[in-house]
Image (cartoon, rainbow, N blue to C red; front, top):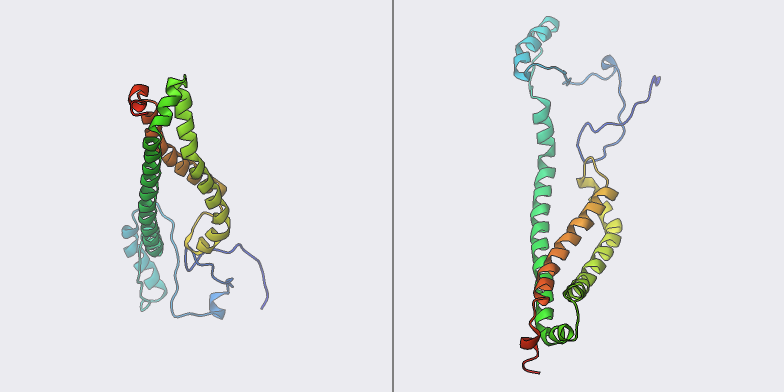
Length: 211
């Protein structure tokens, strides 16, 4: 057969699965039992059905027309399975985020409670509230930062495995990874912020009473 042109590959079977290359042939040379075509219009899609039936009947009165649906419904059907996977993954990620932030808050609060005497001594010796706040916040964010760096490094090796579930975005999209790091860092910062605020309100007299 003679090749008359080469065109860019399109996702014609699935939004996520990469199908093999396609060959477009003239209909008389590749007759199939069914044919599909797309109509671009500004009118409601339902209003075109009588017009389509009339035009097709002029070509062949026995030729049926079926599975007529707007492109929005066609795309929604194609995305249904991926949407369910995305919602399930998002729910699990939300639970993991809640557990992680609760853990960070609990560990930081417990550390502040255990170091009440130390914090009181520092304040009594002239430490400024901003210094105490910065110290607690810095110590609480250290493991959070280490976790973000480690997770970012692991993502470059693991996220390509999820490329089959993605559509319109790459597995290692830099903007997505950057926004994720900023969001997770912000959650960790908020979890450390509350105990750090509590640390600067430590009364030196109460903290040193039993010393």
